[in-house]
Length: 200
Image 1: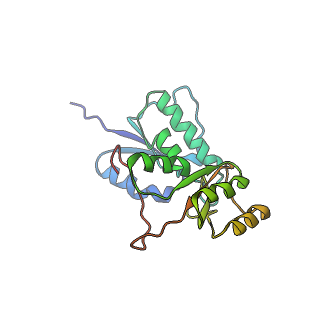
Image 2: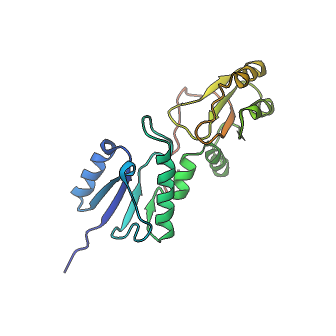
Image 3: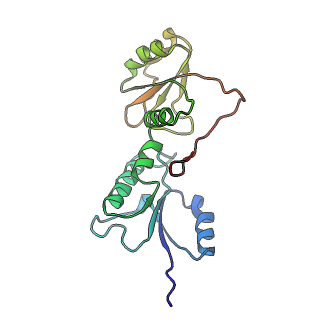
């Protein structure tokens, strides 16, 4: 009797981040083939064939030193894989939410999780009205971004207006952003929300 060896395709951007994962999979008899998104040329015809599962480990926010187009490329690839009927972990919906603070705020609200009041903006000039609706102090953030990049605190309308005039309100690679009311953590810690299926 022939035993089927599960074949997983791993789409990644930082090889060093996946070494342990690949090793553990091999120890369990799972064949993992890594594909570096920065070097992955693909044809739509036959895309994804030959694998039982695709795993997307490409950061939904641009990583330092890598072109922002990598994020978009990963989104296109996982969408194409899904449309061809392939199973994808961290597929197109997950990838899109992971790279959008606006979508994340909507998800937290839908799940009933406490999170800062948020208003999405598409140009820096809109930040002033949004902040007025929320009340100061506020943060302005690029919609797509990670590791705190582009986040600025504004304590007054005068301060924010000066930042807008100076062109220092950063809306990131897609030109959209959020204004969020500042809340203080009761325990002084930053809390991360991880999703697995419908659980968090």
